[in-house]
Amino acid sequence: MSENDDPALRSVELTRTATARYTVRNAAGAEIEFGHGEGLLGPVELLLAAIAGCSAIDVDTVTARSCEPTRFRIDASGHKVVEDGANRMDGLHLSFNVAFPDTEDGRKAAGMVDRLAALSHDKYCTVSRTVERGTAVSREVNVAVE
Image (tube, rainbow, N blue to C red):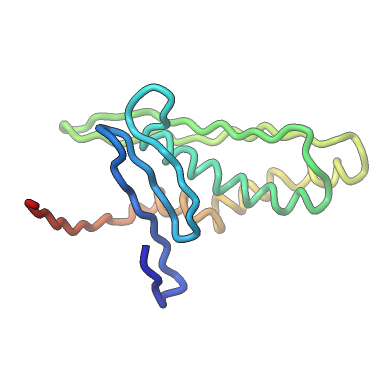
């Protein structure tokens, strides 16, 4: 991946490793293997993971300043819809299941979760806000015969 002078630009590089099996890598070198097949997350599952993960970071980083959770789980779901022969997801939903110890700090952290989840949805989670807005995806295709 190349360096870019635009601090707002985010990018990943996808490489095919086998039929329907891919590795995506960010500029820092972190990788995720995904695709179609046993033991792999699919692209739609990665979308759900990105939405859940974005909100998880927003909620977790703030509540953890007060208290470590004893349980922190977010289930992300949605329905695949086919409209006029085209696929998309609808009814995307996050279900937060978070618990803290029964201490003063734990109760303080627990009291923040609903507000932080709402702030994540309404303001901070780039992923869900982008999905809800319906941002266009452009493309460029370069093909060679070597």
